Picture 1 (tube, rainbow over the protein chains, first blue to last red):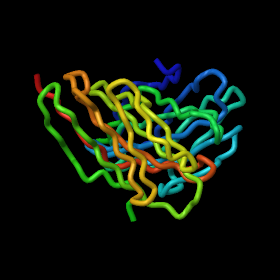
Picture 2: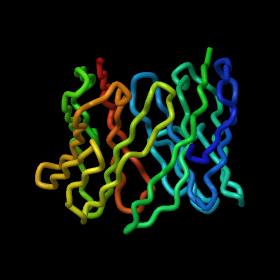
Picture 3: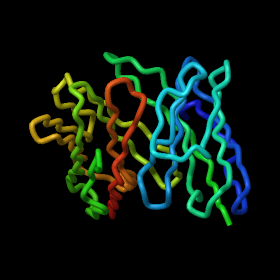
Picture 4: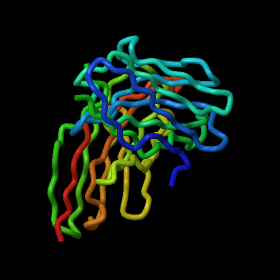
Length: 115
Length: 114
């Protein structure tokens, strides 16, 4: 148990719709990262939020957007859903230090199916 | 260009065999961080180890060991005396500089047969 929770666990949407996924970070963590993991592939970094600001972004189009709240929980929003957006979406929380052995702790994921 | 390459897509071994999972990374940063994660069939990624670029000591944790070689940009993972419970997909990952981007390899699926 990492203490990172995600909701919903599963979701089915149709092409063109919008979706919001939610993540509650582990207590004491101020950073949340989102990943997309297509079937049989490694997680692809979408973006990271640190203290409510976007802190880094991968190669994803602007229709992927996010928010982080004062309690450090986060949302991932995807507009104009495409079939290729079908994937497992993972949230990870962290509080990194350079000299420590800290890492990011992953939630169980939300499996999104776009029809 | 792939920042993290795991060339072994799938490996099958018999229980008690030793197995090494390869990871090659690419970065221009002088400070970076390497990770290994395990993803069992349940789907949740489990942290195994983090290695800082400025700390080249190899590490052993029980049956697990990691060999970090900056000269060859590799961070290989060995499981000694493998067990059926080690069956999972293993990912190597790289983070540069300020931890604000992460790059995962495509994963190696390990099958340990009884």
